[in-house]
Each structure stands twice: as structure tokens, then as C-alpha cells.
Image (cartoon, rainbow, N blue to C red; front, side, top):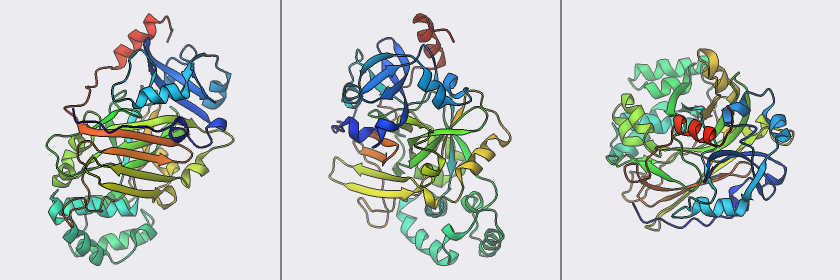
Length: 393
């Protein structure tokens, strides 16, 4: 594996700034197996006896109320949990963070911000060739001639722009889902495959143009209610998807390509959907080569509301264990790293930080998906672990 940069974030940096008054859910690896935990103050409290999985909690009419009533056992203090989670070599005998979801489907919405819509269109027009990105970006901006962020998807103005761009042979599948009535929603990865805070994220070994996608991730109950949120990194291979949209699965779902965390913040009287709609999400990439990228996106600029995303997600499907949904990113990786005009691409050993004041900080190191720890703990392993602990499902 690539030599790791140190992660030395404090518990205060990793958890939401108002963690003392927040309803926080974590999944924690222990010597006995994965445990669902609640964080209260400085304590990490194991509530697995009450809620064997997050799916059990999400089936409650009011997950926050149910969690507040749960009895549990203190595992450790938060500082100990964060320290081991960030260690280059984790101590398996001590608790550490996992991705905070388990049996939920992991879905993602694409091109939900005007800025990312342009970049997806650039990838397609450049056929995945980063050397063509600058030229295509300039040509596209001149042809569109309007601020895409001002256009309501599915509106008459969007239809008129579609007709004008089609006449110039510039309409694309990305403009269709960015401006049309139907949201792009795809399966990001499998249940239990996401990595958590402090773990490695993975890049396909044949990709030469990749980037992080910092996003707010909705947590939805089986009946389609948005009950909380976390942070996510929808790691993306720009060259694969740019060559063909049919390679989306390969571009999006690799070992370690979905990162979630550090915790789920459930909605309560102090934090709700309106707070989420105005959240700022920052992304920082620190390279071992000295490169630094620091950018931010604002959920208020999203073109699709969380409610509309949830409606379309559940319109023709059901999710009995609940579902989490990446909401898309405003981040456009256009800051050159090496060659002028090509923009950003990851290098092995990068550290990616995704942060939002009221959701916390998710940090991960970057290596090849073939070199990071393999995903080997599936649903059967989780159920066996719970059974061995005498926890009834």
C-alpha cells in the first residue's frame, strides 16, 4: 500500500460543532463485532441490544425518540474512538468507526448542481480525455450562454434551452437529467461496502482522471421519510464515465469508492431538513506532493430539492431496510494539479477531507482499490456476529 499521511483530527473536529446537543448514531467495529452506537457527550454507548442494525432503528416511526429511550453500555470515550479510527494501523482490539450504515441500499443522485452538470457534459464531450477538458469547457460555456443554475429542471425554460442546444447538436444525456423532469439516480455501491472515517478510499488501477465528490447524504426510512443525514465521498472516475455512460458502474462502484460518515445526525428539535438545505460542504485534498485543493459547495444552490429526490426515489421502488442517498456535488475539479488546462486528478497518498459544521468531518486516504483492504464482511457475517453475541434480530 501507498505510504500513509497521518490523520490527527481531534474529536471536536470530527464530530459536529454542536455535537453536545445533537442526536448522533455511529457504527463501531469492536472485538465482538459491528455495533450500533449512540454518542452522548464524551461517551460512545453501544445500543446494539436495542437496535441490532440501523435498519431496526429506521423502522421506528420516530427514530430519534426511539434512540433516546434506548439503554446501552459505554464502550469508550470519543477521543479513543477517533484516535484508533485514524491510526495508520488500527488496533482490532479497540473500537473504531465504520461507515454509519449497514443494510441500507446506497443510492446516488447525479448532476443536481449546475456546476457539476457542466463538468459531466465536459467529460462526455472530451470522451474521457483530460487534455481536452479546457477546450470543451470554454466551447460549452459560449454555446449555452446562460446561467444553468437559474433554470428550474423540467420547466418550459429548460425545454426551450434543450431545443436550442439540440439544434446545435450540443444536447447530451447529462443535460437531459440535469434539466429534464427525471433525476439521475443510480446504485452507488452494495450494503455494507462503504468505508468510514479514517479508512482508505480506492481508485480503479486503470484510471488516470479521478476526483472526490463531497456530498450531503440523506438517510431515509422505509416509508420514504428523510430522518437524518451524513457526509459522503462519491469517488468518481472521470475518464471511465467520460468514455461511455455505460461504464458508470465501473466508474462509481469499486472497492473503497464509497465513503460515509463520520456519523449519522438524526433530525430532532435542534436540526432538521431546513438546516440541511443551507449546509455548506467543504472539501480539502492534501497531496504528499504538496498540492492543496480547498473548495466549498452550498446546498442552497442545488437544483433538486431533497423532498423531490426522495419522492422520485420511492416512486417506483421500496426499501424495507431504509436507504441512503448521495445528493450530488457542486464541486467542480477544475484547479490544475500538474498540466495546465487538465484540472484536478487524484494521486496515491492524497488525504481527502469533507466537512460541514453541523455534520462533522469525514477524512480518508487514497490508494488503489486493488491495494486497500478488501471488503469481506457482508450481511451473513453481520448476522453471525449478532447471533454469537446472543442478540435477537
